[in-house]
Image (tube, rainbow, N blue to C red; front, side):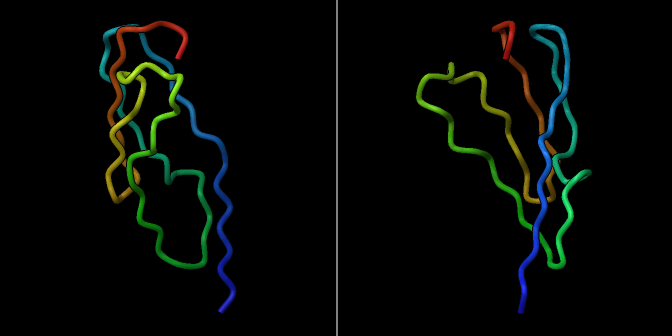
Length: 68
């Protein structure tokens, strides 16, 4: 079976300290079910700069650092 997934970049904008929610699955295309999970943080990013991603692709994100 051919597995074909096209995941385009996701982005969102908010003020510092504001809860942001969204869904990363809205622009992903696949011929099979996708289960999402929280990303592994990049070692140089502040720990508060990692969103919580749920298995359906929905997420929440709050940071107190501007520019992330």
